[in-house]
Length: 99
Image 1 (tube, rainbow, N blue to C red):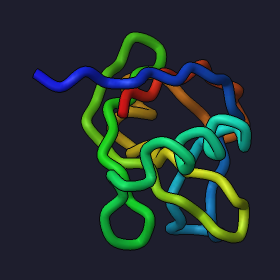
Image 2 (cartoon, rainbow, N blue to C red):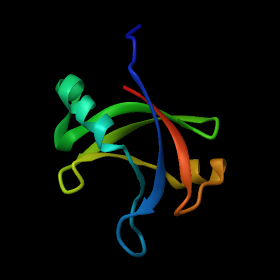
Image 3 (cartoon, one colour):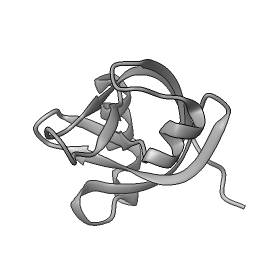
Image 4 (cartoon, one colour):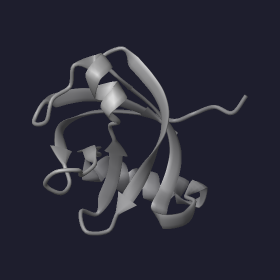
């Protein structure tokens, strides 16, 4: 079993695009900088890195994506997770990401 590094942070839930856009939480830039420095070798295409995420006692397998425009990683929040955890756009949520 491979040990995972855990990062904890809070962030605002936001949506890209107007109607059918994706919903994300941006990782704090200091955490993103540390991840890029130590774990960038794990990135797959387009800055994708496999991750396990936890918020509001809900855990799921996902990936974070590096966004060059924001200079940080983005954690997508699927509709299923938002519904189960009762997460709305604009909420500030506590997140744990394991890489």
